Length: 73
Image (cartoon, rainbow, N blue to C red; front, side):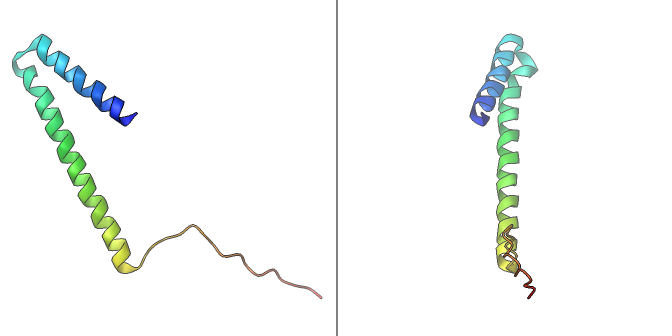
């Protein structure tokens, strides 16, 4: 779905640039550049977060060991 979204998104800007021309013609390039920049920054931030978590030894888990059941005799 994400691939389809970006294909549709970029094609819409491309068609708009061909129809209107002028200043609108720079939009597909600017949108592509902005998308690449945001994607690169997101990857760097995610990697930094993961490395920090691993370095601190804070690897969270959702697993909780079962508690011992109390026995009544």
